[in-house]
Image 1 (cartoon, rainbow, N blue to C red):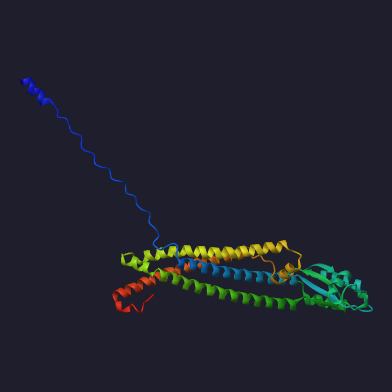
Image 2 (image 1 turned 120 degrees about the horizontal axis):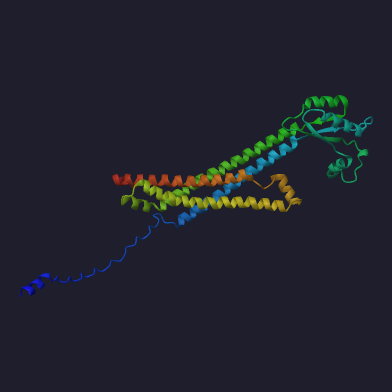
Length: 341
């Protein structure tokens, strides 16, 4: 009897297994979409406007750079040389006078070289006016000596002119100062006109970008109102719109700038492939080479950055002003007509 009680005392009751709880499905956070719609009609229109204005501004900048470079090239070519003109005379040995004039000019400091224009070259210079087969002995045609000078250290032209007149009375020194002054004036005027056109195009681009940005934002005013009513801070709303319009402006400005850079690159390539043709020679003489160099491409990049910054600031200021108007209307509903979008 005692043994059976002892066995019952030491027996451990078996534990029943707990029922398994049904596993919950794992929750996945859906990725946040952009607050401002990434694609809409106003955004596409603003991108096209920015691309067009960016292309025009970059094109104008490249044109001004080409004009400046061409004018500087003309001025440099003229200022590197002076001309000694010797008129024919019955008692003058022309060949000896040409050699004496060249040797005398080379004695002055700053004269680096001299070249006598021979009879054949002189005849070729007169061919457009007097025709071919010209006999220089039959006409009193002056002969020329071209002296190359150092632009940074030019010779004393007054002293050279006086020395030539004493030795060769028929000699006349032309230092091209009149032509250089006229060319400098023309270059400055052309550069000023080009700069004025660039300022006008850039100002138009600025105003167009501002109004287009404001117009695009007016179409999204309801989004600003909803975000502000649910408690979003003005800085958060402005930053979201700022990012959206920054992407639009970068795409538009990048497209316009790249098109302008591609235009100048293709024009320079075409010019290099069609050298020694009448069309290319005339275009080169009038506009110079269709290359804008690293400075021009850096200018295009600067215009792209300015457009992006301008559009972004305009979007931020417009959103901030819209939120301010919403707060005024909430505080005084009677101002609704004053701040209609």
